Image (cartoon, rainbow, N blue to C red; front, side):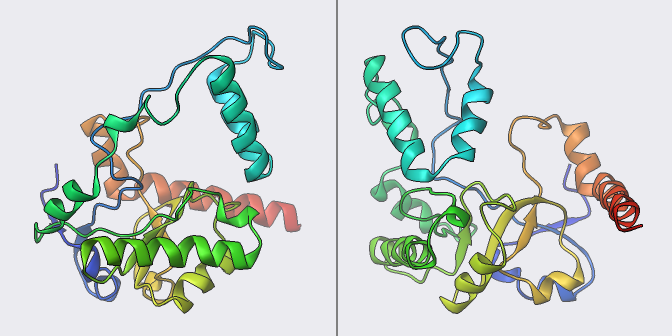
Length: 234
């Protein structure tokens, strides 16, 4: 599937947009053993109608302030007798496992904030602390520099120019969003605002991945966006 591509570590990304050739770098948002499994609960005895599905609740939570969203989730978990720590603790890697993994020369471990807040919703001081403290924790636990960062959620509302500036000010080499796209020469000037090809469950079949890696779907999408922008401006 990756024939014709160079698989590179994240440390090489700053130099590669300036060079010819196709590359793949694996940037994951979490250190987990496997995919998280989400249970869908009907709205028995809660403020949510029974017709609500998981994705509707999820996107509603994404639209409200972070502290309120955490409070709502905690109250729902308590109402249904769910221990939020124990229910998925086995999915996430321990620091000892990460230390062992970090010994592999093909593995680069970056930071992802302390609390997985949507940074765009936070005051700048809190946002900066979320990034800086997570970088410091990774460096302390792994006893090596942490040069790379992945924005929680990574959409335009969660990570924008302010967040891109702060990650650069904190000395990170790269930071990845979840904005869809491939790397191009111009990304050498925007290394803390990199796009990403997300294999998040929607398009994991090999034919889909090959099509996405070709860049054609993104070129088509960006062309449509430009046309829409021109029509809006007219």
